[in-house]
Image (cartoon, rainbow, N blue to C red; front, side, top):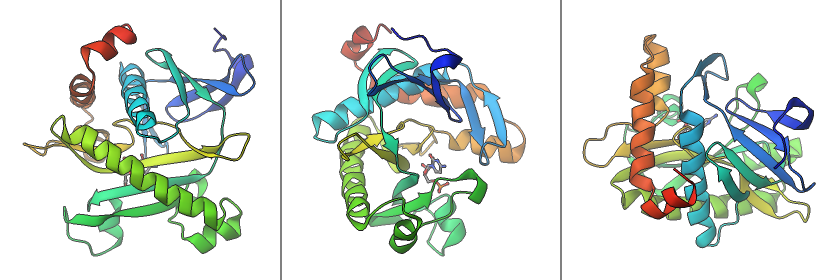
Length: 254
Ligand code: C5P
């Protein structure tokens, strides 16, 4: 397997590093334990997070693939290390909301916890310098980051991802409140789901207690100036334990 060293490093994100793979069309993604909030201003090392997120992401991507959504995943080589298709990423964060919470209720007069039916799709420009501002079609097209057809495809795929994930989480007693996904294009111009889906990028609530099982615990801890690392990792582990079957664990050597 290709070495994950600085020579092969293509891109270092806030929580993942992307290395050139052996094949020119492939990359190796290293899921790190770093956790950030506030456009990367606050950074912490959260033990085991990379391991947990990489496995959760592989499980979700595999399920999406089985339901006809093409993803970047080639294989999870081992926890933390994913072999993936090399994509030209579209700098748009596609956010799907089933329940009103978070930034949408700070920006608009939606009632806290009101359901969105149909789900609300929002697109933000992925750019820390500009603090990820909300996009509309005209702005995306004028920026040259997506065509009208691309935007329609992103919406269609986002709704399909939501449908599959809603069922996946419902089956394990978790409410999928909202999530963020990113897409890229392969060499043939096909739009493919990339990046990751994990408790870093979703809001997940226990269906009975409504306890949070995601990164929101870290964000709130940051606001209160007391981040309880164990609480955050325990929540991620809860999602991991509910989602993975014995077969999955055997396959990935867990
Ligand atoms: O903060 P906000 O309510 O806009 O977040 C909506 C959803 O998108 C949440 O699930 C959050 O975890 C995710 N998100 C993300 N990365 C961002 C912005 C939002 O994963 N940069």
